[in-house]
Image (spheres, rainbow, N blue to C red):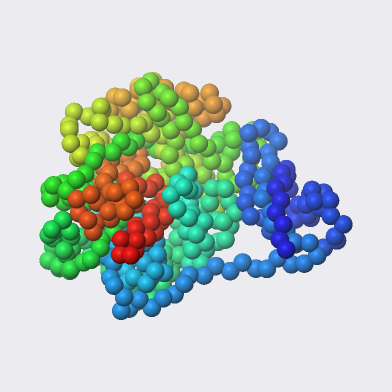
Length: 513
């Protein structure tokens, strides 16, 4: 029978199986000469120079642990009741998985292209500065997380079974280390294959995935969506609709607004994406220790209360790349991602400032979205109306001077030296300056003119919430519409979006009971 144990070991011993075995025997005071173990959870404690790993172990005495297998239940839903899912990101795809497991037939409508075809359009952004409105870093199969990192850490564990989502990802081809790491991460280079496997599973079970199928209208009768219109001219009757379009589907928000369907402005955050050399971050976080095989590229998480609001790090990418994430031609947007090995020489993170209705002159549910759009367009104009990014060295930004030159950056479309104080809203700049100084005290070496700011980091979350019933999860006015995931304001990453997709399907099943 399996037993469980927590131990702490020096970080330098994490690859030493013999050492870990001896620590187990010490802890359990066993007389058995043979036992087997596996690591269930692993987290690095780097709060002081004595770097340590906290391990949660499963072990068995005088025997072998059985191999864990992860699989997905395959139901034939070819003749089952349809459920329409708008969006093939994590919320949409995991809603489809849940539907199949419960005997419903998912029809997934995705405005963009399949995950591999998206790559050609990303290449055009980098090389030609051309943004396809429907195929970019945010739109297309797999959603925004596919080509911007694949982080799987979430704090939203009370809302659903996050472990089940991780196990299903493993069943579709993700490395099982994601079940062990405290902050699991797959990597942009590995996600496309996993997402392709999910699509193939949906189709094999009798569901549908339709690409280049952009929802352009809702036909509403008697407080219900009777039909969806996509690509302006194809109409299809529906029963239930899960709306999982992601935080950048502005045309969907506009459509709902024009139809006078209830929406709410939602606070979000905006700022810059800062890039340091990874070696600087390693040296700070690991107390001078760098280039050790037993230590992963260091990450950080920062938060402070600046002048009048919170400022915090967002989507930190060790060994990562700053990416151009605009969804329209006349805007500039940044984000970051890391490959699975996180072996790029740079580390980047969003540093963002809370934004609310008190910061804008406009009223109504579209106010914060319009503010977001205005800043992104201003950055596009400042960068010469291209997908190059307005950039500035950190201390130059604090001291309000344009950088004479700029360091190397991972941002492929290129940089333009701009005084960001003249482009970004004043309250964002002032709060960022206070925060950078505070962060420099928390992390000695962080405050440096070798760090570069890319602007803007503006798509941290949706600036709009689509309301829904707390229990049944349907929209309060459109009874068969289920707002879902990050775009509706109910998730903040791959895992929480996937969990929310599953919850929406469960709510639909409950409504039919």
